[in-house]
Length: 164
Image: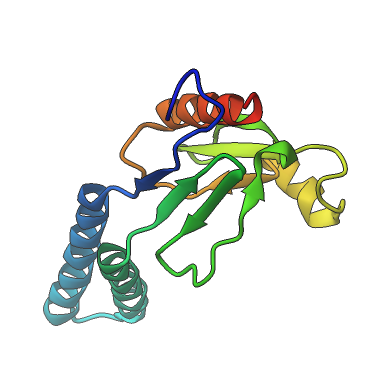
């Protein structure tokens, strides 16, 4: 970012490959543990087969995330999330966002959430439900910074971009 000028430098934040690699390895451990338990078990293994299917799918998702990591692209006009399974990023203008904050998930963990300015998006039942859960919209997890650090970074970037 250029401070003291009328422009803000574009910033791209890439998802942490280290965190993604750990999730991939954890998924593979569960797949191999389930296979081992099926071979060692003499009882009904239906649940283990479901576990293999689920964690194999997780491993594929995390492997893809290593090949094509998610990116958060910030510029003077707004932000967009790309990479991963996102084929064409949707740009969200800074003026449409009230700000970023951290909220806790019902079963633990934290997310970076944001709400839209009134009138920026059409009201819907889904949006009302999402807001009651903590935020109208949220950024995915897996960034190299903590959710608190990301919220501060995003709010500061937004503030500078909107005062240019």
